[in-house]
Length: 561
Image 1 (cartoon, rainbow, N blue to C red):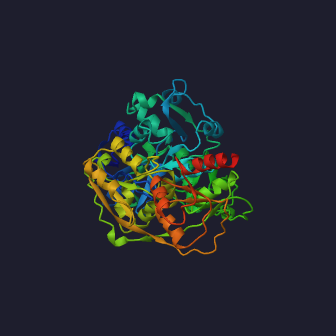
Image 2: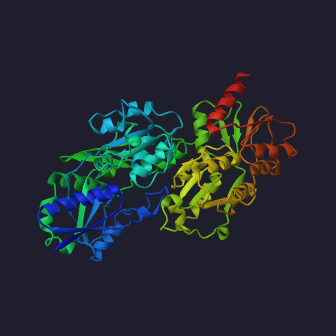
Image 3: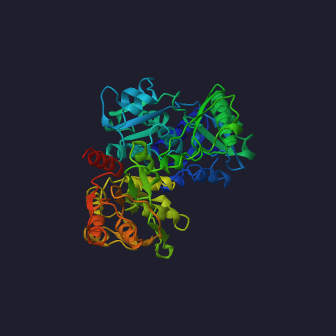
């Protein structure tokens, strides 16, 4: 009898399957490895949380169809409510459960190579001190995002998908400042010489498990079989199964099930010989982070009453009583308002435009999955409204969720994250001219670009890309519609932050009072303001850089004067 072993096709998955194969063959059986592409392997988008089992279901489906005898998985990828017809046959002895954070710079004394050869851990507080304000963190894991952002909500999440080796390449290419990966996978790849010398030279730290509990099942390898073949294959269980690993992983998975979560849930927990240590974020942690609110992690142990955990934290209102000079912002960003209020800059949000979807204009988006994923199309998002519009269209156009999203800047990237679809790239561009330059320098012209636009946007940006031989699709994806606004309290010494030409026009159409100082985002907004009657007696300044830091810089200079 030849045992057919199903697995994903990555180097890491093949290491796992080969490990299982070796144990079985060493005991006199013949085997064949069957490579299978999972749904997770057919996506480079940022959202993992809504597709539980995307790395396992295709392989387990082959079990159900009896095309393979056993399936090999990373245990943390296995849903807590898997196929009814399938059972876990065995858990191999668990590897390291730790996470490692890698930085995009070399460090001989703290290199990945040296770290993998020792057991040194670093406290999370020490690691946080090494991360600059506003840094970009590469991870698509909800657990890692929630644990990290409970301490540092200034850091920008960047989705990173694909093979471990590909993620490290993106770190080296400066797509983000730091990257978090599982130590078990890194060790296994090093053992088969799949990590480059450049990767092994990266500055790296093992995060202390006391501060950073693992994902349920992390570090363990699961072997699945059909329920009705369990007795037939029980000899393989005897060969493969590690009893302590089984007890610990099953306990972690049971607690995860009791919490109502899956492998993408804001919880870290580890069982060590039945002793549980874990941390869980509130279910609304993403909204709390996105609005600039802090949130707390709750501890989980063997004595925890899961029913009494606080799953929802209150979002603090940003509404203030204004008694002094303030910024009136048309950007309508809760996060920006909260962040500025926290440093003593009073901000009042006054939205004057709203998003109206134009779903009939959105094109069908096709992805040739036979191509290398580096050649797949990219969605270019030039504003927070574009990010929100794209998120709302995912149900109608599922391929949107499978492609990378490129955000023009931090505000747009944060809008992607708030909607549950983190951007894979943030270009840090202040305007479309800088975004154009970024694309020329970083994206090959044979990669199709899709650009959802406002009905009021100029097509110059898209057409300039076409002139450079890029394959560009663009369309009126949404409309910026003026809101009717009344009774805005504006003093002469206040500052009006105008976020776009549409906002400037809407402010005038509502006949709202105008203070002496105007702060605008981008030269195009400034040009619009200069020709609108009503703004002609104001002093106009343009933000030169990321919104938050430049507003703080401008405000401090202004108030000093």
